Image (cartoon, rainbow, N blue to C red):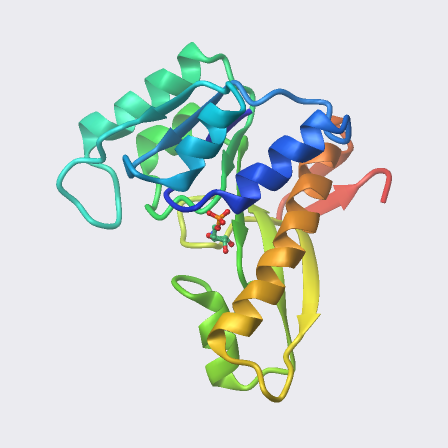
Length: 201
Ligand code: GRF
């Protein structure tokens, strides 16, 4: 696996811990970040996993073409089979998607297709839903729109703030992502259009 992240890296830690515990038959070959100071890089280095900052270029929400090629090259050099987005805050475009078609997964902090985009937990709270959660999905050319692999719900409580709900969703992510990655690594996931079937639920 190659893991991409821009933030603190708590999902990376949950995944790396699950691999170390023998729960996911996989290896993290490389961790890449578009943010030099990202916690995810420090967590990877703590675990002796190759970790690299790749400058993203001049845009704010996507990678410059040269940067996109640098990400693809680093992932190909590490011979990864699966790209795991764990808090990567840029939209991936054509060349990247083509290089790893059908082999990129992401985790999003809402029950998609509700509340795609930024701060899904805050959108859910502001909307007033009573059940929130997180989604692991394949990545396609849209924003948080690819086929859904797994979802986990959490309750929204009357006195929740954006912070308390976010924390509850984050904890659910740390269970859901390793579970989905284990099924993918074991070849137990079949894709039929938008439907993702678990062979061993
Ligand atoms: C998570 O909330 C994830 O759903 C979103 O970015 C956040 C990453 O958190 N895509 P962390 O860096 O794994 O702690």
